[in-house]
Image (cartoon, rainbow, N blue to C red; front, top):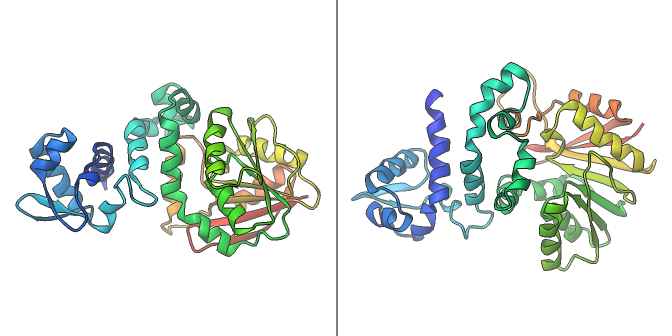
Length: 323
């Protein structure tokens, strides 16, 4: 367990170098050629790939050559839902883990301690990270969308607002599944440009209004339901209550707020939510929560927890209605 950081770092390095792009499908590639194409040191690259292959990322075939496995294939740039952007994003921000000890001692975000600014501010200050973050989040969380749509019924909602909607991948999927639905995407100004481009490419620009703004300051009115996927987990309890409180100011009495997040189980049960909670502690400074903790957030912000809908993925749809 102590040495497991090496595996994470190795995968980030493989993604940053683009090694997977230079291994042809259905054939092996020698490490000397891979080193030449990626600008790496051949012997060191061989040791890295040999190590990764022991965990199923590539397969060594002999003569210091490697072929693809299911895991290495998704590190290709052209793979559907490629994980390469996620590795490149973490490669650039990996030092955030160095602040974990500080976070545990002080309760302050580890990333901010290391980099000198909150994570989302840092991404906004480095425009090259924005597209990597969008693509990385789609890779990590994209599979949750179909599971959410299969589990939760959005019919009966006239207008759905996606708060912190990023590049628009989530609201686009909901609009495509429900042709009568109208959408609102709300996010910061340096994000909404990417969302407009995405909606335009899918022909959804006439069904979804893109609004720039900060959810700590206000939430746009006009929706029957307010959807937030992996937004509330980025923030402390007080910040989450501020966001939800702003939703409460504009939501109609028949409306609902839908939080799509991991639900942390109790006791000693292993879960993706507990893994993700360490990322929240180290990077944005937020937290993953139990069902009871969501109930308390709702009560503090003027909602009541109505139901929790599990999905075939690791996330649940936590539904709140005005109290």
